[in-house]
Image (cartoon, rainbow, N blue to C red):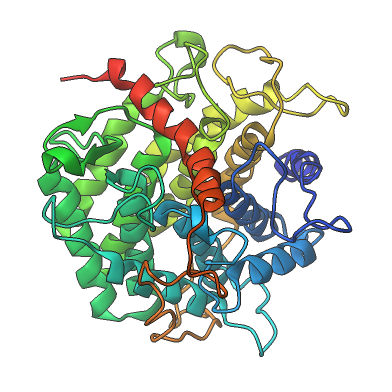
Length: 427
């Protein structure tokens, strides 16, 4: 099948960016300029690649990476990352563990935490971080108070928590997870981070009790809530409230569909793509939206036609401009122009691969549960007692000036980016 052949080449080129399996490097790490969270997303794409194509070429490096970065506690708080880690960073690795559980990716060795237990550990730690001392609740962007962005409540962190809770509810059937998913959804809507027309805004600051929103909209913020909502609709066996929310989020995606007739229904990153201000992280956001849309079409079948129209147009446009790099098959970011934009990178390649391979969603089973064939065994107590911000990895209980500088470097660039996008505020 042509799509599998294209996916195979794009995956090969994507893995060429990975250095964590080289002697002296760290399994699961991508080289600069890529942050740790994107490495977690990278291996989620490889899990998806195996799911859609059956090709297990990259399964060994994927298994090695996830187990290494899960850390000794199996909670994606490894000692090499924790000081600069945000809730959204941790969530992206949990997404990958959940994908492994939901699709019966080969289970880890018996002496390692299971895929499901890893996601449960992240859920338990993030639930313990829920903070209603200001803004009426929600998760902070950052985990530790010495990190830039600690007082920012962003949609991707809260959407990540919502998404994990919704998926755990469906996979395990445990209503406690559903209660947290409802709580998280209610908080983002009460705060206004999800607007009346299902726009998903980036975040808000504690300094004004989250009353003024940063109204920039990103594709992956729409996607993380859409995906979680589809799991909740499926878990509730067709609740009409969740159906309305899914429909609203799908309609709000129109912001991310090209306005040009020549590239109709092709996804683009509205906030930065046409003005050439996208940075490393944003190059990858369409990957997650496309990935999640495929699951949504399976979990909430009435969405299929709308989603297929967008995914097919986007895949065709993305593949047409994958003509760069040393192989002539590396991809740029801009799918709407019909021309290669001259850029290469993990985000660009991952986005193109995801949107191509997700068009195979009708050839595979939808996300499994422990009642429909999922084999990953959980641990509902995983991660409990380890999420207090005073607990740092290993014996490093003292935060040094070097630690603070490293943390600042890791978050300052994105903090500046948030400020730079304030001109995109809409009413």
